[in-house]
Image 1 (tube, rainbow, N blue to C red):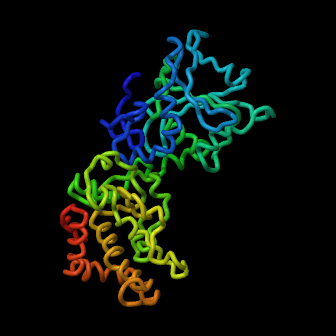
Image 2 (image 1 turned 60 degrees about the horizontal axis):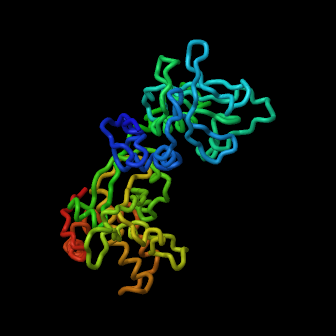
Image 3 (image 1 turned 90 degrees about the vertical axis):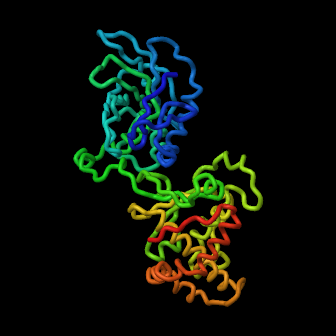
Length: 391
């Protein structure tokens, strides 16, 4: 298989790293790879195990079957007709009722595709035999801007050369999906879209015990694409009440953690995520002050972003997580009659306000008592005390 250009599939950053399995798409960061994964995984295995090219006149193409459920990779044959190479579509499309739509720019991400992507589809929707393309509906997972009928074939062609087709790649596939999500919209709106998805926001990676030992930091700044799946997660309840609403998502499990020797806390341990997601609804019954089970087990690393897509710093995430763990968790514990002083829920809720959070930042966060708790936890995890960065 030929090596592909290493431009990031999501943000176009050069010198990115190829997918280790298919080697047909590249990513500059874990965050960009996660953003593309829901689409990439549909064809990654097919690319990595596809049959050998049947002949010199065949190029790799993508087919969206009429009845779904998923697109497939296949070899499209080309034959010399009228002094040019013509794709042999009859066996897939049937008859001669197809039309071609060409795309050269990804408007969602604000960059040129660098190639011409050709979409072959039915040009007559009056034919009762053609049906809405289910595989496109399932991939888009939303209301389409345009109704695609019958099978759809996508080919890749060099810009300005209608005779030179090339193998389609999984970077092209990302551009194909983004095009399907915008085709039928007002072109002027797409041209003036501000900002395109290629612009990222600053988020924070919260490391688990294993990666704190590797990087000597718990909170690390990262850049996150605006259509990363973290933005579709439920907001942290406490953060919403204190006026700095954040969303979080687990990173994939790192196999390196399994090889780390440990006693007590496993390398993938991180209670920070659970504290950040404690339930704050006074009417929630037995879940008051507890995190959902998803956030209580094998958390590993966590990605945190602001819900409003503004930048957030490691210092801001640190103080928010400390507020949840060292300020609010003991109060929840007391209110559930499992600790010392019994507090009614409304007294606990009174601390989860913008003013209460500001007071914690100005006074409690730098107090000796909180510093002692941090030192205790660092010693328990065997990570050493991480220097604080205050807002």
